[in-house]
Image (cartoon, rainbow, N blue to C red):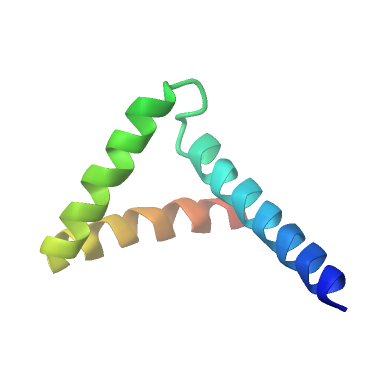
Length: 71
């Protein structure tokens, strides 16, 4: 039973990582260096923690990008 849970957790983790990688590609950043991507994410994380308006602005950009997929 513990092995089954471990396998399911691993599959879920793998699926989540694939989805996150897809976001990088969707943003047009597929070929950027990993250090740059990490820097962008760290900077963005600190910005959204410190500024609710920035959080809302970035959320709106992301929602529009997802909505354009539905078309």
